[in-house]
Image 1 (tube, protein in one colour):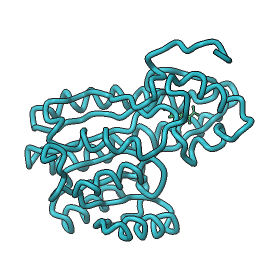
Image 2 (cartoon, helix red, strand yellow; image 1 turned 90 degrees about the vertical axis):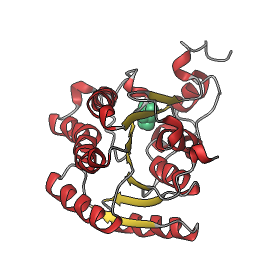
Image 3 (cartoon, rainbow, N blue to C red; image 1 turned 180 degrees about the horizontal axis):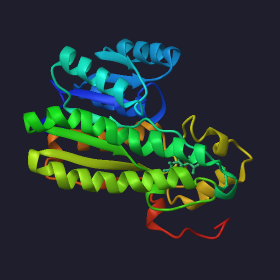
Image 4 (cartoon, rainbow, N blue to C red; image 1 turned 90 degrees about the horizontal axis):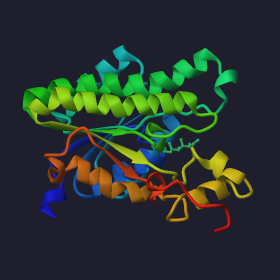
Length: 260
Ligand code: GCO
């Protein structure tokens, strides 16, 4: 178990107030990590911090937008002052816009790229300065199935998540020499608020995903915790620039005819 023990480690999870970010934060805290949680919505943050603390986890809230360079820099400086170090960064905060490309406003496309790709770049740069000094660090980027495949109406999200996969590989290239491991997690289709609109019973996409996923179901958020613990711990010290897909087998197959 020592291989996966995060006691004494400080983990920063962006967008850790709900969904996959919260599931990952709970996982890291369950093996000893102290949590730094960022978000932009005070109400969601209060509820999330209560949830962490009710489990007995140390969790500190920081309300700021990861795309705001100045605000992010100020917040990370306060974190380093208050917590002394940031061992693990999980770039999880993200948004999605579901609209066919031909109808999507450029401003909406830019917003998704800004939050889902530029935000992780800003946060990684800010946190890496301290990690480089300490010759130690773990960065985990929340990629996606859409880092590999496209589908109707998620052009901005797929472009951002494809870019985030390559940013993961490039930061690994530049920072591995400082003993920083930069990897990604690529979730398949999970039951979260982000997928609720396409998951509700009766939505044809719901049936499609269940049929297209070899495990025949949507993933549960806490099923990401093990991979996050692995990539955040000493168990992955010689793993760099990889994206681990937690997808029920969906990327392994072209699928099968409906009804089979
Ligand atoms: C969609 C979904 C996906 C999933 C996830 C898959 O609209 O297709 O929201 O984007 O959220 O990213 O990896």
